[in-house]
Length: 92
Image (cartoon, rainbow, N blue to C red; front, top):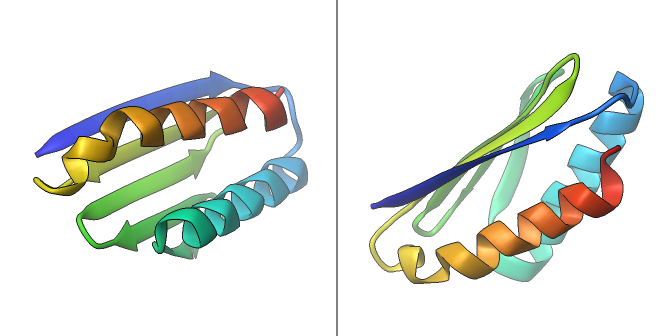
């Protein structure tokens, strides 16, 4: 089982971060067939076949943690790169 964590510092407001998190979740749903659900005002859970993750909005950072099953672990590199790119482009 493979996993990774990403952390991106931010100075954005919570409403801005929520909009960014919602858009990232929608992009992952469309591209990878996962389901995203808000667990609280600050946590988005992402689940799919062999993929489980959480996006947590903090006061000064966004944190993403992802666990991949055996078959999905083959896509760890591309998935991590996609999330990093999205955070770099949309979180400041």
